[in-house]
Length: 288
Image (tube, rainbow, N blue to C red; front, side, top):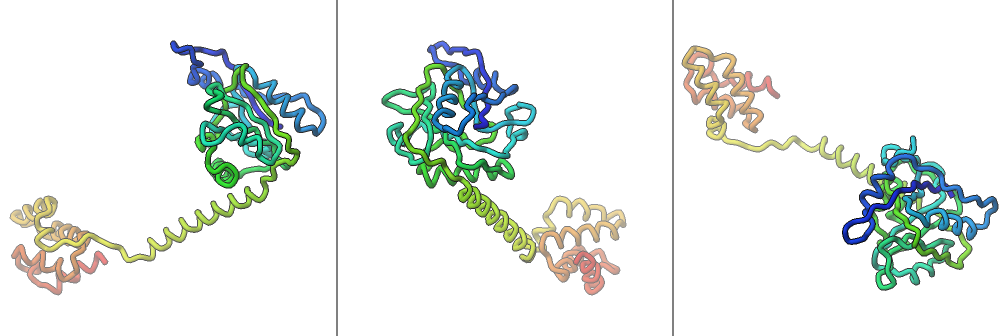
């Protein structure tokens, strides 16, 4: 099993509880493979070795990271042979020991007999690889929904996640022999993401094919626009050509028709060519 771990020096809060934030802060870099020292295919031996290694002040994970830097951008998602699920409520250790695939329970530092908090260490029959973090999360969500009724903590599906352990952690291996087969569920996750991507693509195509919807304003609305009034103020200086075109442009962007843009300009009684409706319509048509 290709698990990773990093030891930390425990720091305690004033209430005597372990400072988890400081533990995690010590476990950002320098993750190393968990050497199980088991050279046969006896999964019980491997799980027992796994438990003995992490029953210390350490953080562990089923994932590894490039440069041993625990960050989702550095995650390596090839040949994953182990899954870890975190349970804080909704299911007990007794319930989970009935899970019909070879697995191991490891209690967390917050575990009590009355309130079971633990991780399920689940070895796979065949290693699987993921395209990216999104595919990994989708796959884990599917497993959680189908097998665990969504009781596992979905925050732990983040590819930068690691798990805090401690020397008093309790471990228990179930009696089942079958290893978990994940291939079909991975295919389901890939299909789900493909459908999501296709739905997104079709939505974008639909938006492109829809006629452009503009907010509709009346001629009087446009005349009240501050920018239009600014351009109109320049008419008194004999400056018509440029501001007229700019006002027509604002009218078009505001949803006025070519005829309405012509009527807008004519309403200012500038005279000359700016009183010729056909000429003004042709000017407005240049914005089509």
